[in-house]
Image (tube, rainbow, N blue to C red; front, side):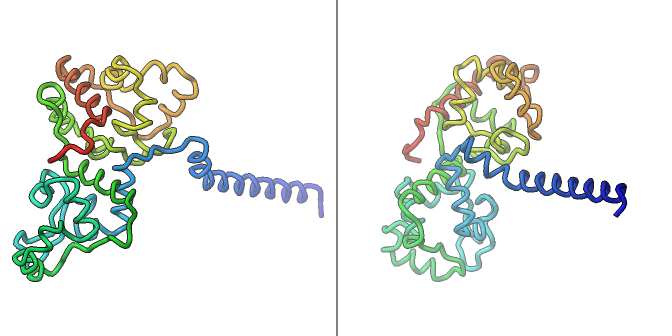
Length: 271
């Protein structure tokens, strides 16, 4: 074999090896990243994934937002999880737990009229008692509370901030009621963080940083750091800056609302 042809073969082999290594690194990267930088795992975010795996969205629609038609039902369709609809069927977290475990709260299951009503409709809520653990039920309840918007902030700035967050579409990125966001290719952890949990505590260390995130879309502690700024520039979905679009009192309201969510004082509060 001529020397020039040997060189071409070596070059081709090297190129293939580089391609294979690159492909392997690309495949392994998310797994390796999750080992080095553990992703956030809030109860509501885990509940969202579990609801998907259990088939909840098959009947209740994507993320529980649009129930499928249910012939014979008094409501015409399987109920959704959002916009307060859940409050028509459950009055407490315990009611939600019994819907998940037994298909309905005991008081309803013991009611002759309720049983007749269920027999009339084609789609009935299944019972998952033998399929989920107590921890998983807790996660599902957290997801239902978040997605149902049945988290009532105190009157005043927190309540005003909640309304503004809806108007601005904050939850489209940060997840239902800030419970954890969606995928964000190129970002450090691969997703948009929520408004509470360890991710939030790492990204927001004081009120000044929270204000900077809202007004500027970032904070100096990260934008001035070479490694952090690399990921901020590389991520596909970027935090918008609202400093020139909102009045100071509106930003104050958003800060109050996000701080209330981050405090997690809403956990366990009745409907």
